[in-house]
Length: 446
View 1 (spheres, rainbow, N blue to C red):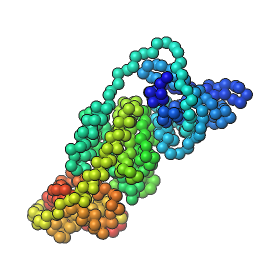
View 2: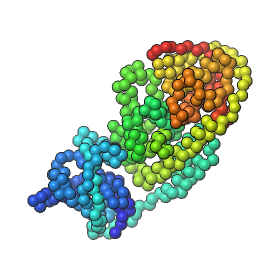
View 3: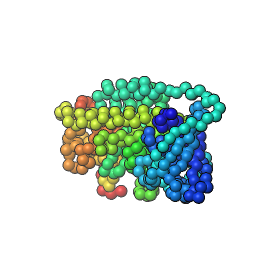
View 4: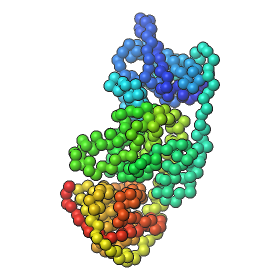
């Protein structure tokens, strides 16, 4: 008999499953299931959505039988189950909730399908259901060589910017994943901010999402990958982000919200958190307009990739801040032309250049320090370490990734500003290049 892991295709939700239970008086009951979820090689979880006959029977008699179907071969399998517990929160519940939302949206049942809990069962036996001859296995992409090629692309990276780009490039080149983004964690604000994207008309670098909102935020909060095979409106992060900030900041707060660059009609989504030890570093997110694009093999491959990526992020971040080269003192070259107006709002450190929004938060505070030192002290050479030690910036603790903040700032300037840019000049060292005189204005509140 096969193991549960060998039947994982049966648990993708492509073909509905059925469950049979029995009442205390011996009356049988058969019902369709929204979802059978693979937990491990000894357990599955079923959706608890309604307090119906199936639920009553299970609470009275914790034995059940479910039948699942392999969508590729049409083979039927019967699972003998024993009910153990119901989970109403945590990683398993959130994964099943997200997947159910996709199924519900796809079937037009969003207002009916609501997950109340994840019922965990021990699998006592697996039996084949004999019938017609099964169709041959459909051809499958071998992901191990693709994963190996992606990981090889990370090994030669000497800085975080190159690492971010190599990861997304590898996904496109070796895994045919054309829409992806990387986000880093802002622990102080409870948010994730975008540092690199691929496959979108607008990069969306600097866009943010709260921990716990959308598929990305939920995956980060629960420390688990979340995969949805159909479009789920409540998990579309562009909507979740805007609604969230609208509730907390009011209409004026939307002026400085950078839109996420996601697909307008996303058919498949997969979010994987980046963890290093007990610290959340960020998240990797991929999507596709094709429904059911990502299977469990893709999820497994991206979890491995995310683990390696997190280690490289930690290594390169440590290298940038603790093995940097000393700053070089030079007089910045003279510039001419009409002055560029830079306005800084102290309330949230939002920065505007010639009335065009650039950035806010920690990256905004860093940028304001750099241009102020340029104008007041005639400096344009800086190091990561001096920023970290500058008490006026009030940076988050050392676990916060300063190098990622600088990459974010560098990329926003490259996209939005022709007057100022940041150039990396060595390990942990960079230069502020200015093309026109700067006129600085600080606004106490906003």
